[in-house]
Image 1 (tube, each protein chain N blue to C red):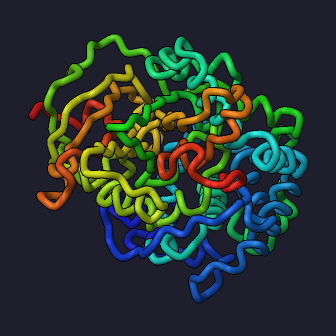
Image 2: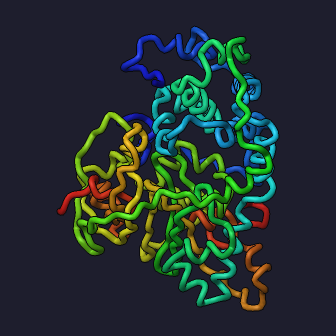
Image 3: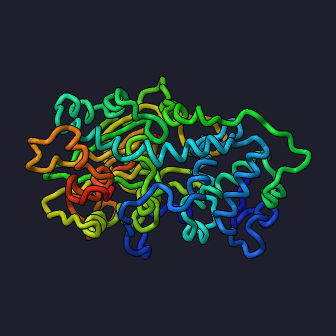
Length: 218
Length: 219
C-alpha cells in the first residue's frame, strides 16, 4: 500500500528515495534513477519512452481538435452528428484513443458559453488536444473554474455579459469534453484549413474565443 | 477520499498562470517521467482508477507543491512498490538487486502509436434499466468514502437535474480498489450555480458533473 500520513507509520521504509526530511529529491535525478532501474529490470524500454514523448511533442496536439472544429463550421451534417454523437463523428478521423474514448462536444453560441475543467485531477481530451497545459492541471484553475467561472474567463481576457449563460463541465468520469467555439465573423471566404488555423487550444477548453488570440498561442 | 486533490470551490490559490507557446514538457525529465508511467509494464489488473487513487494518496502538503510530472513519478513508484515489482532498496539505489530476473515483455517503441489509439474504454453493457431519466430531479448523496470516488465534495447533498444518460461505465470506487468493474449507469447532472454556491452565484450559470447511479438519489 502507498503510504499516507494517517495509517502508515513506517513510510520511511517505503520511501527511502525521499530521504529523512520526507522532501523528495530532485525530480530529474529521481526520474533518471527510476528509468535506469526499470530498464535494467526489463520493465520499460527507453525507446518506447522516446516514442511516447515524440508522439505528444510532434503529432498529437490541438491541431487535431482544430480540424474537428473547422469541419463542423463548414459541414452542417458533420456538426449535427458531432453534437449528437461526438465519439462516432470523430472516430472516422482516427483521433480516438488514450484519454479520448468517449467524447462530448458542447457548442458555444451568443447565448451560451461552455468551460471545461477537471477539479479532481486533470482529465483532458488528449487525443484531440494533446497533453494539458500546466495551468489546466494546477490548483488555481481547478479550484476556481467551478465557483467563479466568470472571474476565470475575465482573467483570460474574456468578459461575458450578464445575458450569457455559463455552463461549466467538470470531467468526473471518462467522458472528455471539447468546446465547439463560435465561428468568428468575416471568415466566410476562408477554407477549412484556414479556419482550423483560427482555432486555439484555449478556445476548445472554453477560456477563449476562436480567433481571439494571436496565432501560436495555443 | 476527502483530501487536497478535491479542489473545486476552494479559495486562496491565486491567479491562473497561462504561458505563451507552452511546450508539452518544460524539462526533459518531465517527458521521461510521463513516458515511464505510460509505457512501463503494469501489474495485472491495474486500472486508471487505481492510478488516480494513488495520486490522491500523495501527502497533501506535497500534492500542493509538486508539479504534475513529479506526482506521476510518485504514482509510478507506488504502483511498482505495492505490486512488489521493485523493492524499496532497488528504488533507493536505482539499481536492480542481484536476485532480480530481467523481464522481456515491456512495450516496444513500434507499439506505442497503436497503444495511444487503442479503443479500450470504460463503457460496459448493463442488463438492468437505468433508475433515472433525463429531466428527472436528483440529489447527490452525502457520502464521505475514505477510498477513491469521483463525487466531489462541492456537489454532495446538492440537487440537480439529469441531462443525459451514458449507459453503463466502470465504477471508479470499485475499480480503484481491486473490486472489479462493478459497472453502473452513468449520467450527466446539471447543478445550478446557486444551488452549489449560494445566492452570490450568477442565476444563469450551472456546473455539470458525470455521476454514477449509486452517487444519486431521487430529489
